[in-house]
Length: 233
Image 1 (cartoon, rainbow, N blue to C red):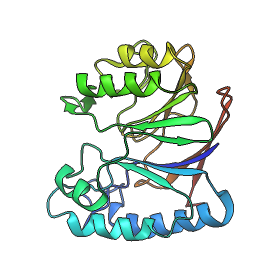
Image 2 (cartoon, rainbow, N blue to C red):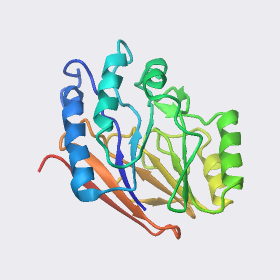
Image 3 (cartoon, one colour):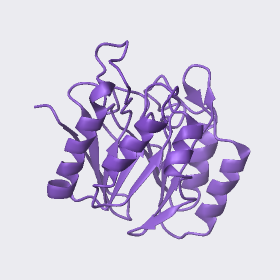
Image 4 (cartoon, rainbow, N blue to C red):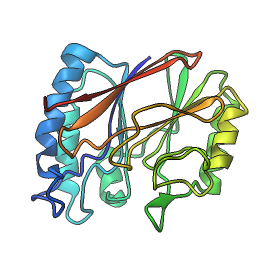
C-alpha cells in the first residue's frame, strides 16, 4: 500500500507569529500537493495528521476551504484534528472520522487523543477499548493514526509523547503488529522507529519551508519504505 501523509498545515487567516511558518498559504500548497498526488504519486490513501488550522477561533470557513480543496483528491483520505484545531468546527465540517478503514490488507484506526501539558497526549480508556476491539476483530496489521508521536518511551527521540505509549504499542504488538503514524513534532523523524514489531513514523510539518510531506510504501509483512518529499526545491 502507498500512503501519502501531510501533517501540521496550520492554515490561518493571516501570517503566523512564528515567522518561519507560512500557514496562511497552506491552502495553496495543499492544492499543489494534491495535484502531485493525483498525477504522479497516486497513493492508495492520503492521511492528514492534525493541526489542520493554527488557531481555533473563527475557523469554520477555513475548514470548509480545506474540505473543498480535498474534494479534488482522486484517492480516499482520512483526516484527524490536532491540538491547534477547533474540535467543534472540525467535526461540524468534516464529520466524525470513521471507526476504522480497511484498505489493502491493513486496518487504519484514527484517533483524536486529549492533549496534556507539554504538548503531550493520552489515549483514553474508551479509545483503548476501541483499539482492542478493532484489533481483535482483524487478522492483518494495524495502522494507528494520531496527531502526537506514538513511540515507546525508551525509544522516542521527540519531545512530545503519549503518557501511556507503552501500553498502546503493546496492544498492537500482541496481535499482528503494525504502524503508528503521527505529526506534531515539526522536524519529524527521518527514519522508521522499530518498537519490536510496531513501527513508528513521524511526519515533518507541511507549514514550514521547504513544505515537506511523506510517502510511505508498506506491505502486509511490514516491509516499510519512507520518502520525505517537498514542494520547494
